Length: 290
Length: 282
Image (cartoon, rainbow over the protein chains, first blue to last red):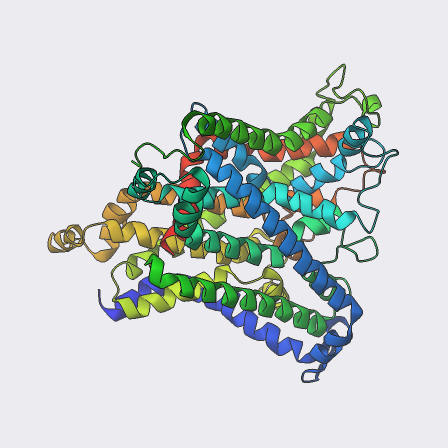
């Protein structure tokens, strides 16, 4: 295929990516250097002033902390659950197919719907969670889960974990299934026990895929918007306001396009930093796994 | 394909434990959804009461109310339309590009694949303001086109990666033979590459549709009325539970889950393959 023809075939995709991803990123960065309120016709260049202000804005710092803890906790729990589930699913058994289909359900339902489902479960007066915990004697009186600043973030995390563990499970399962069988036979011949086999065969072989799964989920979690926006709207008192929710409010509720863009760029930089960290880990794995 | 799976915890105990753990996870995945199903079947007088756990006289009243609501039906039509158009656009643009990438020398290819991969990792919120201005400048506010355009950006990378992989599996000899027989590259694409990659195309189509059907942030930003508002936005904008009968919300949310759950059951293998493929190959 000649280069000129190749360009023609690549054209639509490249054009789309240029117009709706590359160009917007550049514009977002450019806008973040401005004080810009479209409704007042204000648009002046202010350099890095928005970023300087962000660094001193307690609301921004809190939302960064919320985003990071949300990501760390959810991804860690998802990984532990996903690994357990993938290990359980690596052998075929009757009904294996159906279990996989059922596991897909949380991941496949719209996030706004799953947020509504959990909102109802968390309801203070007639939610399932309170009912169960009261019956079990764990709590003495009903708790309004989404109104308590100490409980609301864990509640949002649980909704997120429920929704995204299947994705983790599927990637880890694919990783487990690609481990060459002779390694296990060799381990068995050497008389290795279950734990030793896991530690010295399964885990080293699974590591590259585990890193990919962790990377995907971390990037997803850093930009989390839907579940928080619908379940809590970022409240109460900003206790669940993630960076994406903060940016969205700045952009489309107070219409501060410059300041909101700066928050957007901050999310981008955070994602880039996390990606770089993971790529570094993967690069260090390469010699042994390639 | 993979031979007998190895013992993890010793033969039988491991097997039994595995089945139980898997069943437990299945229950955990299903329970919140089933809870929503029973909520949707509760008569109004039992909605604000717990116990009883299950409604003594289940009713379809909420489903009737939702299905008779023209707004709900309008949102479903919007979501179906946007989802179908996004799927088609992304398969076409992604398929064309993959066709070129599968035959290109290594250097330029890596660049394009790397670029698309990084696009899929971009946080949408960092693109939102310029996209909003772009959509407004093109006069596309509150239209299907605005959503198709922006959704395709995010579904394109997976499609492009998967189809490139599938097209590369097609023997070059077949391509050259077709060219010798007088078929143009265009004809080869439609008569050889597409038919031979059905599995990959199906997996991409399903994942693209699901992405679009579920996408919320851009749909929230670019739509203003029921003319283009999609289901996730409708579900999110339902009034708080003290003003609105939650039974209707429950019924609506169960209904909008049905298409994707049906897809999950029918094409489970394709979905799993499509999801994991990118990660394994990349």
